[in-house]
Length: 310
Image (cartoon, rainbow, N blue to C red):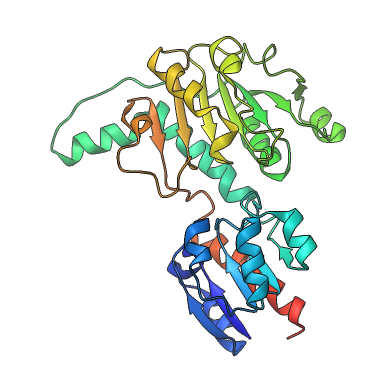
């Protein structure tokens, strides 16, 4: 079996997933993703399976991959928005992912971003590293109102942690777990343009598709939310209207934008949004912990092996 590995988290983080992969006696090839459509089309396709990250598997890529013998895409991670699932199904290419493993570490990252920003942790650390003793004033998150957009496994974990900070919780989702919202005293909302105005924090945890693209629209950013709201995005960049986000930051219509995902990854060097003082960006590392990389890596390998029966 010829297997290509493109997930950089898988490759860069040591752990038993590497040992497990070696034991399978696959013929292995490694490339550093995420690979664009153009890069994938230039590959010499001769792989039976791929352990992928956020590579761009368009229809044209999948046609070429199928002709080269591809049978399965095993996603290291959860999101499949970069894969043309309709074409994969028509071509008979299996697509598997690793659901249910990211919720703890991604939820932790949400609060790491919030606390780092509200408490000026990064700025203060930079000052003291230079030998300075500049004392900034921050904000508490305890007692604030948080809107959780997407109440799946990650959204639920965020809600549980929010309760520990004595936060009031709003929740928006197509499918609401009524038992969970009742147990955790969560207020369900159905209209983002009308029911976010009391939220101090908005955190995004939904899948990206045609319906959810630009979910945080210009209307939401300018008139549907407070002008000091803090938005946290650890899901997918395009859930937010990029141009509207720039305008909202420039015109001080929102308080801050904290993100672990970006519109182009890696981020382009001259990205204008990064220069706002109230923007904090991490390079898609919310799930990149030693604990979680091993869990996802092992699951991605198991998905391959179960498909091939090895």
